[in-house]
Image (tube, rainbow, N blue to C red; front, top):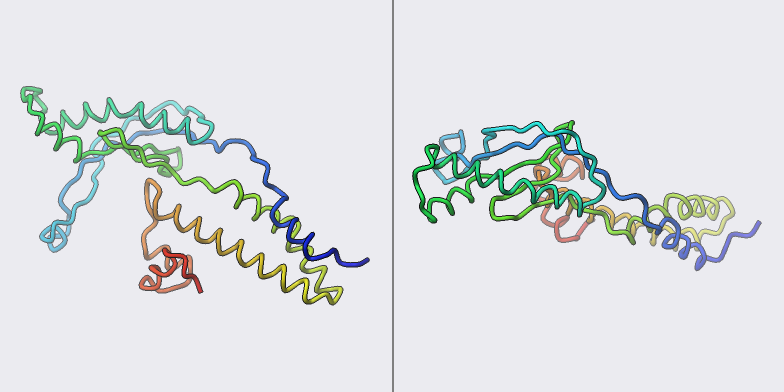
Length: 221
């Protein structure tokens, strides 16, 4: 059997798997209310470093949410409770009525919405900001699915049949797709509600932490 034309191989990479699947499911099970405090390490605290400390936790009935819009609406629904929490932290007696005090309080608290495994689903702030997990671009998802399901098997078949030029051309396209996927996942890892530390990212990428700046900007090896 002849190996298909490389143009068809390339079309297979990008067309297979582009249909959008079911919406991503989220299931919040608890809300943590955090307060901004001085860093426990004296040296870090002296330089102005701070750290979030959990001061209260609300257990919530698991409620499946379909997709990021539903999660965002859920997160914004936490804002009034978070504001009450902030005002209680700075004025437990509820006697002060200072806009400046309230403003400072709103910026010193946050709510973390987590699932049953403790994974952060959203970071909510009293001013109405909500940081949600990243979502993989639908086109990139389709390209990756096409690569796994069609592209790579066709590459190995091309190699087996001695069609090395076609195989190399397809591998270059595959590498471009994988590099784009690496960049997308890295961006989600550092921009989500609970960013992955530089040390863990460097370990996953098998590089030194000092090399991460190149990865952030897309200058991968």
